[in-house]
Image: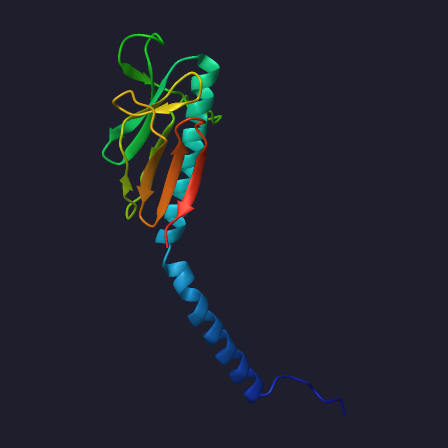
Length: 161
């Protein structure tokens, strides 16, 4: 007669208790997605600022970074590069079915504080709305800072404790 092997009741209870402990530990990470949204937005904004610098140096025309709506940041250029106002939206570098403009939407729960608008010139240098070149431009995003070096246009993150 063959013996059928299986799990005992104690083994099943032990597995269920361990799964409960793991679930209770991991659940807050999945339920609290504000940190993930903030980080993804920070990455997207960093990429947009790097792209703005590339556009400015490649075209030889200044690029302006400003709000296009209360919760949307966008890139603008002058209509004819040297004169007129910044009213021409910079096209997105992404390959989409239809043309789109380079914009990033600020997610709920993320606040962006900074001196907008600011500009990147054809040399890749950053200057503020008073046409002065600051040492750096700081954008505050909740617990993080995005810093743009005024001379080189380098974009990097600084996490606040």
